Image (cartoon, rainbow, N blue to C red; front, side):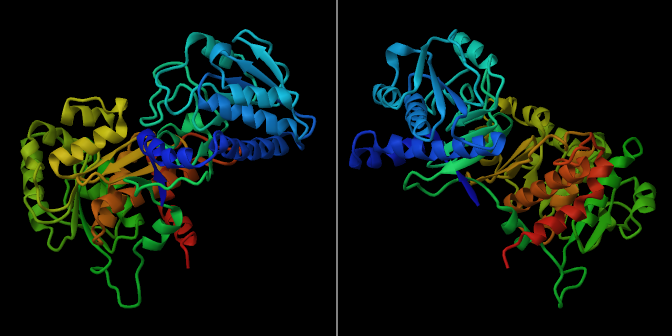
Length: 481
């Protein structure tokens, strides 16, 4: 697991260290870690450290102090360091003195000469800052044409929500001090690669986490010597219709690919589903499904009275149910179908569906809003996005940062529902199944897109589905023995 902590939690953990250590010691500890990362980046990008050039973008807070102390340390490694002070009257005095004593060059104001750096260091705004970059800082950042290493977080991005409300830094690398913050997952496109530097914080138990690939691989249900198709999980799928048969094909196929023991299809697109997936057991509607251990309902099923009747019947069972797409539209009009349901339930909205369910836009605080809906309705909630947010009613949150937007394609959500439904049918709790399924789904999308190669390209949901088994194999290979 990777743990994420809010600004308040980090500040509370820092307080006893600040009281116990000599003044400035914690900052110098952080700066030492920052210096190591900057030196490593210089080495990787330019082949060396001594003689290279770094420009510091220095604001008035502690992040500016971290950057200045790091600049002093880089000078001792032979790096030519130039610091641009955005607010000279409020600069960190001890850090500035250290840089000057080490021979660093200091420039005043956002219009100062940047020099010809190999790297820039963003020390403009720290974790206490909120809102976008102010115009002078935004203009300065816009002039940077080299990779940026961000100090703790990219300036202009909210540390707790990952929201950018205007100009913000886009970093190649972000050096996080002491703890990961939600921004590092929620705004990964701005953070770049994240390096965590241990500065000795004693942190509480985290309620926002990310499952490690090794843990997901170890927990992925795989048949043992005593298993049969029933013990491997039987998932029922009601998806697709005459208008949208592809939703049924994608959803049922994803459940097959996710190593479900059996997939029973109870939707109205059986001919199309069976022509692609002959191993699926097609039944004449929900009432004829027989033995099922979890249900997926909604993708492409329609929103008419017949669909509502089927949804009521599915949610009336005591089985785990994943509710997606058209079923979410129906639930938005009749929340009592889900709210307070005693059996495990998972809602999987995208932002628009979330707004229909709640009347609120989740973009302002994706973790907070997902948590709120889960608590209000007593269900698991998966909010789709590049960083998927999964919340339990108890407040536990699991994140999955996809590493790209390859899965942003029509039909990808149908595949995700099938994968998670198959996992839920094995007895995994909705929170765990959703996080595991989201990771396999994003990995499959990246494999399909060829990410990490020179041939990365847009994909279709069918291409994504074709890589689900490969994604499971990759995760299984990373499992800790």
